[in-house]
Image (cartoon, rainbow, N blue to C red; front, side, top):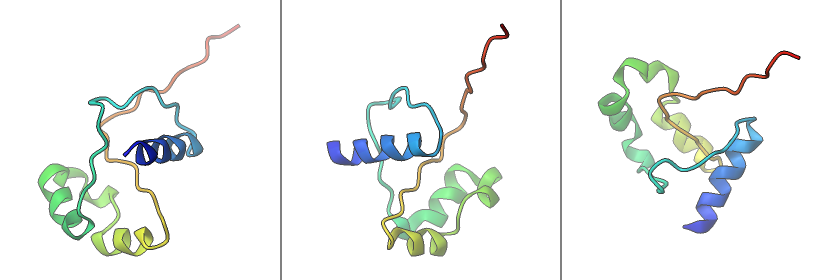
Length: 81
């Protein structure tokens, strides 16, 4: 499990985000064959923002790491000089 955490953190950083912490101390793995059902149950209002189940499965085959969903992200702003 530690290797999965390190991989997820590395992917978040690679995408340009600042990693602070895993909120509940856990990384949750979802069954990709239940992805569409999960999105409709948990994120119905934003379902168009997520990849489809078939696209997710297709990209997982190539060692794709999908980060999300998360409800918000607070960007750091720089202070004027």
